[in-house]
Image (cartoon, rainbow, N blue to C red):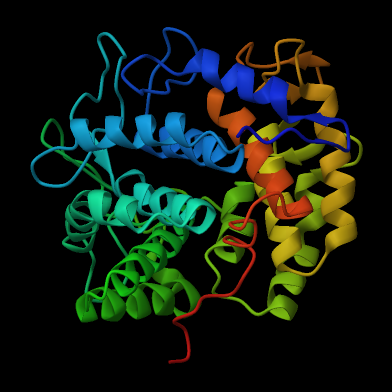
Length: 343
């Protein structure tokens, strides 16, 4: 049964129709028609289908991941892009994220057979990612058989991996499996994010100008509500444009819908429900007639930019709405502190 809900100018049926138009017959969910596909955003869209109650399309998307997983447990960072300059690049947070999608699906549908079916896929993916963990806890951002990439780690990517690793551990526990090495790796990664800032951005310019580096550690679940609130307040003025949304970077006049959605979820994790509701009100203006959402808006030039309505942007709106209005049993997945810190 498809969720039919109109809340705060949100027509979920129309968004569902748009996401359906993006999904191919084999389950793949590219950014848009004839666009690229990456495993992270593909999984995000699958999660939106789960929230919307469309289990068939969610499982079709997960089947695409299962069918296209590399033997070593990874996925390429880019599919369906002709003459791609980085055809062999593999980004670790992309590889980890399907674990989040599978656990999220289970929270909604409570089908243990789905966990059993996809656990081998999740297990291979997580083992691939953890093989790239440094002894200090951080995880290499990417690898390639095509070129020599910088050996470095990203705050946002590692934050996403941490939540995915938590979900993978919960899947294993639900299946009665012991994954002690995953729990050890989890604590090492959390420690790096909390206490070892020097392990990130070692070989390139700091990514602190990106809003995701500001709020994504909150989504990882490593902060208390009070700590999360203080983190948001410290740089709120740098990133949030009143009546528009959240900037992608603090030095460019560009707000993006997906970052705004993720910030909404971070606000809820920080106990700032009023801020979350205010940000959510801004989203409606970026929706097109077909249900899709424009990726971003340049407020200096007063133009939609780029002229793209990505599947993952529409999916991010659904995830933010779920976190805010509790549509599904998975609504609090990203707003609760980790279950494994302090054990």
